Image 1 (cartoon, rainbow, N blue to C red):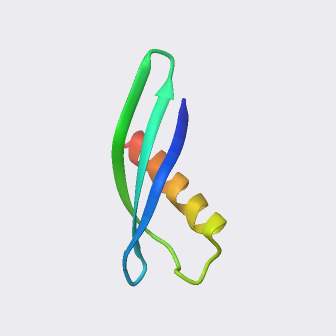
Image 2: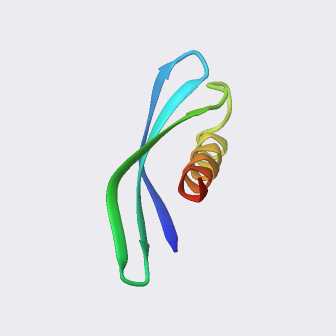
Length: 61
């Protein structure tokens, strides 16, 4: 399974929304979204890592 973050938007305060796609085997899901918390003062790479973590957790629940 591969998760690709396609966009990240800052909502307010520590709240962000990430849009992502999931591919793997015969599955492809696009236009999925997850809300997550991060710190706006972090580097983009760190926010992206938080987005990936949130997307992974969302798929496992």
